[in-house]
Image (cartoon, rainbow, N blue to C red; front, side):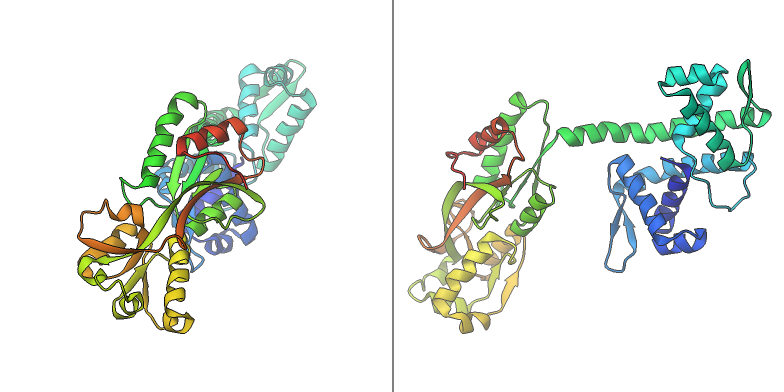
Length: 393
């Protein structure tokens, strides 16, 4: 890490625009963007979210860290001002490590002794100090046969340099601890459970209970998303393993079926009394379904196309909501129809009726992972917790 990167990244977080910072500093936009990326990598967390207008929104982590970063950049500016750099000039790319090594030499009074304690070559350390002085345009050390002592300017800069190093280490140490934890954590992505009593919720709870005693070295992180987001996350390595509600898994992944459950067309009981004419039900009442990113939606569309035909189905307005609780509320209290797992309907505290879509339309839960992406013992432990015999495809 260097002081130029920290100053540029701080400006980006403050102004929330790469282009503005590039104009103000005279740096290329790619240089400014690279500084932000390097800081994000160093602290091991995303600091901004990009919106459609190409501007930035700070993450909560960035808002939390910005005061500390502002204090660090203020100390950097104090250092550069004391070194005689013109105010407003672009900071030189002085490395934090170079400041640390300058402080080590200033305290020991010897480049040779400092090189030995830092476990680097003396020529390398000598060259690094020469580069530091060249970038600052100032002499920090007086070299002689007796050793290396800080100049008067070096004496004034020493406590500021040490403050910069300590403040950066406070930021990066937390990041290092988090990065080590990130490397050890296994990430599982799943489809959204229907509720706390759903089969998916029960499986994930069982996985969590069985995980803790046997996988203490590998923390577990579980998050819920749509089927489309899960597949994209597996490809991008955001997830180590996913549980999806369909079996259309790309051939470059390994998958195994966890369970299958019948789907059902569900609505208020008084509406479902017309089960002999499903086509009329679908055309006479509003339909609410998850979006196309969801496995339930895909099976529901196949079923309705078989009942109505493609043209009649296209004429039906379908409300898309990727929230099962909202869908259930619309069905139970507002007369909508939907498609849900049949096993979940009986547990709902509403007077509902349903038409089973089985055996032609089943909701399949499948587990998928990258080839070679999980140790076999770990994979088997996950599968035993989720249930079922391991049948890979």
